Length: 303
Length: 298
Image 1 (cartoon, each protein chain N blue to C red):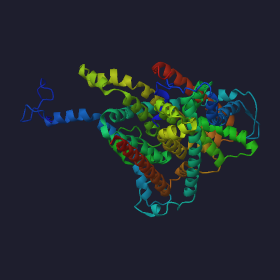
Image 2 (tube, rainbow over the protein chains, first blue to last red):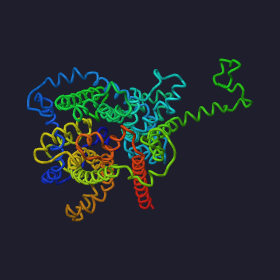
Image 3 (spheres, rainbow over the protein chains, first blue to last red):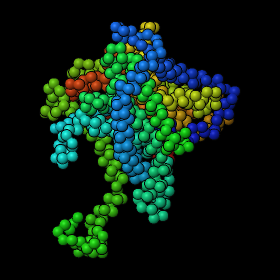
Image 4 (cartoon, rainbow over the protein chains, first blue to last red):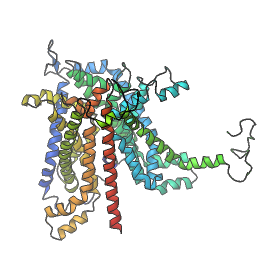
């Protein structure tokens, strides 16, 4: 999965050595690309086109589940007005989870890159290993850990820090679940960019009488910025579209946009057009956010 | 913190007020220094424990002697480990997941490796567009991909006799695995020294011979890593599968549906076993590669 870091952070995507016979034999390249491009065309691009066309369809009155081709933009109007709170919640929870994941992941990535020594590979395995237990099983385990009679809620209630005595079925549990589930996507890119850094540069900060925090702020963090950027995107995007954490850990009311899309498609008869409009709006919103974010914090390597 | 009863002179910072050996740093001070030196490592270990906490719960509750719901601890039993298929549907869904995982992994790995080779070794028209086409699926929320696939399968593919089920799951899984294979294998090919291949060609190896005798063995570790990544992505996928599976049930889908009334401990047994098998495989692969490395060094 460190490959994800390669996508966003690798400065030399186009390396100098090209095959010498490249020009004459480019038909080989097309042959090599063809099956994969066809597959992505048929099962990624074509479905997106279909989704766009569904988002403008209208339903036959009285026949739930039947639609006709149309240019019905009211689907988008309804998506934006009726479900604005759901969008806001999704972005808020995903943003909080991304920030928390960053705060938790950074020390781990830092220790792996600079302090772990021969334990580095073992720690790497430990970061990836929990992935191999189904994420739904792990999320369900969180619902047991955070349950009212569980030890986390008991301790926090003993300290009187919980506003209404519960964690489970509150937004806190949802954010906690999102933070947990996408944490490795934050750790691995940050680790990849720190690992490439020269530890002597960071030591130099200390030698120049910078204190620990100043060294971190002015040297370490900028070095790891490509990884932080990739990690925040890889955490935020899936978290904003997730519905499983809300379903297993969250409250009955006040769902996220992922839950709405899922229910509209699979549980509400005749829900396709609005659900498709919601999906497209989500994708567009995420693209805009990512664009602004990369413009603001991006390094040359990324853009 | 050591002197709570009498006031400490403000001029001496955390100085050893009550230590007899005033010239050596006190135990508290030494602990502070030790903590500062090991802060990153200690927090890293705490984070790893946090990552493993739910896995430990999954393991523990695989021994729960539960009645209808496996939510609170009720007593110890080996029963679920003796018969992991004891609950209806759990092993059928596991087999489906394994089949889907293997087929998707093989196809995605072949398609992705071919693309990675073309992307690194050749210049061709449309390369930048192909790059975008490979990147965008990884940056698209799963729910959008799932929704898009559902609409094309229901409104398009159903007309030519392809209904939601095993086939549509495999088609979709291959799609989202391919991009990850490309970037993993591409990174490996980029790290190769092209002069090795040039040397083979200088020695009159044909392009085919060069590929199979030189390039392929060198990129094989990357391909193996990509295949493992693809399998774990496919095996654990729920959101897209939930959209395109129709009545077919995969293991994550089984667990999700069961979670409404409490996941049977048999699912915990299977989930934890998959974890153990995967970790053993990874550790084994690491062991083999480090063995090889030490052999080349000596």
